[in-house]
Length: 432
Image (cartoon, rainbow, N blue to C red; front, side, top):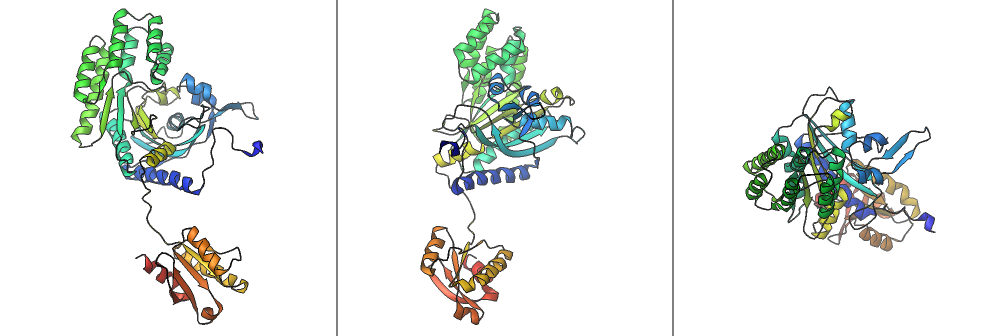
């Protein structure tokens, strides 16, 4: 029977699990609407070269890539940003700026399956395109903070850095971009010793190595102190200093806007994706070592795909990881209570009337099931309880002749006979 199992790294979501995924997706979509982000839908399948252009060597190696029947090399999307950049460079190049776009869906990477990491996973995605003002970076962080708050996390924090700090040091030391990318990927995996060894092999000066080491050690919760120390460490590298000043401006704006969240600033923070050019950040909760989402600024990607030079910043919260964190913190879904009705016909001849009643109640926007297994009323009521029904409508011959049915409130364990014409009102009345 092994051929009928799910493919390794893929999952089935049973109803309760699917409900959690859709709940987080719903909150993410509502937030997009509140912040003025318009939803777009991009293909799951893209040209390989598009997805590979500025991802990372690790992602390029782990993409589900293959040739289609036309001989074209294609791949399942490993993330959203490349597709959004393509969209801006082609079909939306003349759209008024700033553009605020939202999307959500499944992504694919051939990672080794482990806790919180699967080969098929879900993300939401917010992109703010067309401005390099620090207020845009602040909005993306604020939006992410708002999402965490709306989902009900009791404690969470942001790890924040700026790609311009490390890039500024490495650029001034004459390290080629390809070599820089390899160093960044090692740092992203927390393999600091290997990253420093590779930096030495790239003919960085001894002063450069010392600055890199000190930069990696410069981190903490006291934002102003960390930034002050970092600025002193990289004082000989103008672009790195400018990056720290930019990061300070963004964090100052969030503080002045009274946006409250816990922060750990890391001067040597790096993310593996090669397209980042500015601020970068990740969201964490206690007891989970994996990031629940992350993002940053990428000002050169759209231009790479044939568009104009267009600054952009975005974030991709991981939907299934957010669900995992909610389970860890025992956060309950804030789903409004609604009626759910099971209609039970006493005998086979009355099933047609049961179906007719179900259509009437659905027109009143009341969710309805009809008992379809031919069970006795007592067993049908037990099944209705098991399925979480709030009410049962029992269609009997005697009541039906008088234009009535039995309405049973399964929560209060009460029942009454009501007229069919007022049935929907009676059900709705029970929950106000």
